[in-house]
Image 1 (spheres, helix red, strand yellow):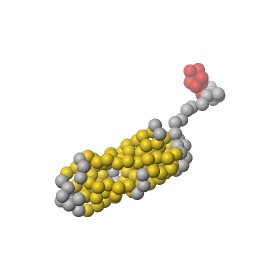
Image 2: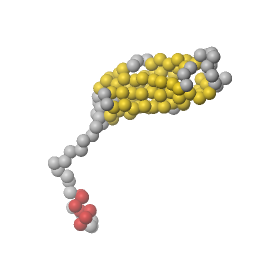
Image 3: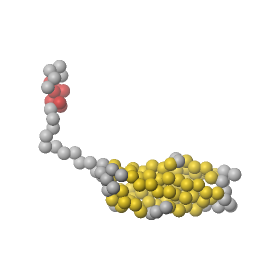
Image 4: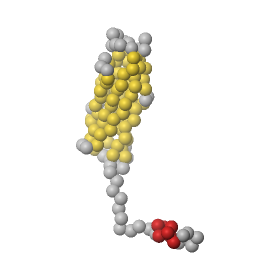
Length: 128
């Protein structure tokens, strides 16, 4: 043990034995791009990525909502199985109808596995 440390710091330098730290398995959610622009009568796509955190593995369900309504959205799949240390990607297809109101819409993507739930919000702007 270094001798130039104060007695207080020397106490903390000793290795801790018999202790374990509980780490809860989890996952993260990201979206690319983080915001979108679309014109009436056109479509765009959004990529959603889930990544295992702290050795999470299991089935994850994805759902979407939009406010206000007026866009059609469809996912490439509603469920995926994440492996420990892995990631999974979804494609969200978004279609703006020809009579859609111009303005900003909020898309919320929610990923859920048991009691774990994470959401990502994406702004979509409809321009002429």
